[in-house]
Each structure stands twice: as C-alpha cells, then as structure tokens.
Image (cartoon, rainbow, N blue to C red; front, side, top):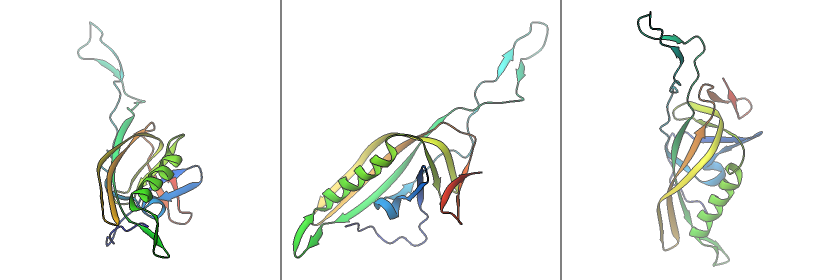
Length: 172
C-alpha cells in the first residue's frame, strides 16, 4: 500500500509512451524530488572553413544542430504492508519492488515523452538510460526508497507540454 506524504501543491512528473500518459505519483506512487535538466540544448560544432586569406573562421550557422543530453529525475516512494483480514498479504518492500517492475515494464523499451509540471519543461524522443538506488529502508511495516532514473533526450530542440484537455503530452 502506497503511503507517501501529502505534499501541498505537488506538481507531477509525467511519462507518456504511445497514447498512454502516466503521472508517476498516481500510477506508481513515485514522487519526483528533483528534475534538473537543461532548458536549452548545447550546440554541436558548426561546419567551418579556415581560409588562409581571411581572418577568423568561416562558420555556417544558418542551420545549427544540437547535442543529445541525459538528465536525472530523483524519485521517492514510501509504502506500508498490505494487510487483509489481519494477515500481511504484501510487505512494504514487496510493494516497492512491484511498483519498480511495473514502471520498468513501461520505460524499458521504445521512445517516451516526458513533462515535468513543476519546471514546465518536457521533451520528446526520450529513452530510459539507467537506474541508481540511493537509499532503501525497511522498518516495521513501512519501507522507503529513494532512487534516480536517468533519461536520454535524442530531440534536444522540441519542447513538450501537458495538454489540459486531453491529458496527453504534446510537442510545442
């Protein structure tokens, strides 16, 4: 059973695969703690000529291209044992592992779109790029996990937003 604290004014992190859009807190109980990713991409080196009879470089900047990048989202989840008829049917630790597996089943293959409603930043052509567990604690009937998920953005130019009418992430 998910037992996250109530956070006044919490703004969710969304992941969309195909037409299915997931609020990480509502779907898996994952609260996004931090999501520092760049608002603007880094440019690739432009094509340039170094003519001997001209000062400086002759750079072609009419159509610039940009580097892909990775970013990390740190998540937090707290669960309690699930009890039915005074019997523990799923421990808090089992619940966390089940939620992580359900999350991984969605992100492990293919392209995603992401949107962080706190920073109002989002990207398309994103893929899962890694996981790092930073803390796991199980005490009594409660378990807590803090972990970081790394994503790679392969379209560093197109931004996304959450369409309030459809509840889907769309390119802008």
